[in-house]
Image 1: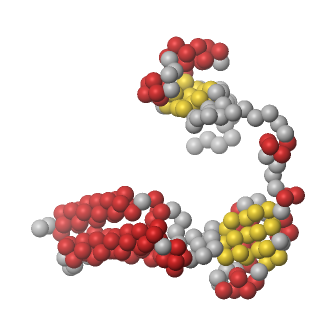
Image 2 (image 1 turned 120 degrees about the vertical axis):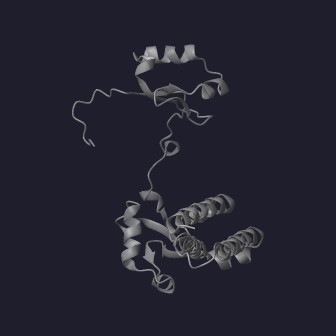
Image 3 (image 1 turned 180 degrees about the vertical axis):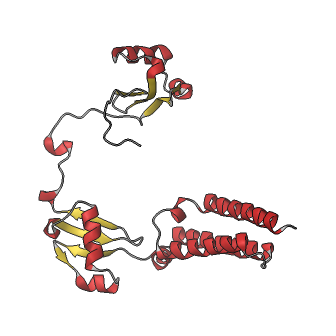
Length: 236
């Protein structure tokens, strides 16, 4: 077989195997990863890379190795669901790194977690003063979860005793890319006549609408093809 054709076929097989395994293993494997997820993902990627370019290795050998890794990952996920001990062993435990505004250096040292990285992750959450933090927990996947002290938390509507507009459903997309999403209209007992009426209230023609969505609180958001912005701030 021609070498170029062989690489093309191996690439298609590799992509297909990777896609099928991703669908099989679920979203956890491609989300923010634990140590086990990281090792599993790197291993799968290495096998697929070899399957694509290493023509000296037989396809069925790499396919077998790939299948074994998928089975190991799936079995580990299954054990994690059934056993808390297995879940802790494979994924690890969260670690408290700040308690009541005090940094727990011993916990950070055990996790090989630096002050620079702590500051970076706090700043990503718009926290520049450690005294504001009640608890900061380093999760098993490397993310930092922060609970601020009560006096530094952003107030919510309930705190302000304001009237709340009830939302009983998800937003409904009615027009996308200038085309009416008829299925969404039918499933929510909305008519085309109603939609046109709502657009008329906003002095917008149906043909001018690029995107329209009905929010959970009943408010219709409409965006037109012509935004009437003479000098856009960011223009490609």
